[in-house]
Image 1 (cartoon, rainbow, N blue to C red):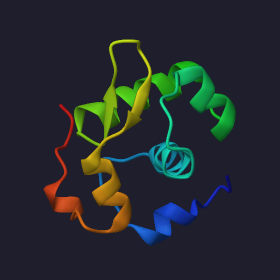
Image 2 (image 1 turned 60 degrees about the horizontal axis):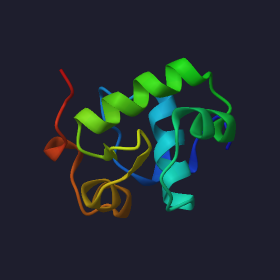
Image 3 (image 1 turned 45 degrees about the vertical axis):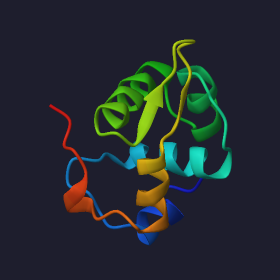
Image 4 (image 1 turned 180 degrees about the vertical axis):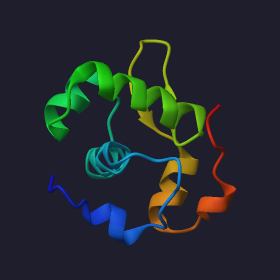
Length: 95
């Protein structure tokens, strides 16, 4: 993944999102799997603990879901955002 994520230029910029969030979403867009913070971090080049925090933030916004097994995956809402079918204004800003 590049420093300037392709996804960041493809979808509407969201004020509360960090650059890592676009890398996380790009990972899930490319790999439609359930993955742990460690697996995501190793694939996007960020530290595991920080990646885990951002996964929780994206979960709170409804873009990801954490399954009972602790793994994360993209939601239908996340897919709609990536496809450009969900406006940034319609995203839930995490508390």
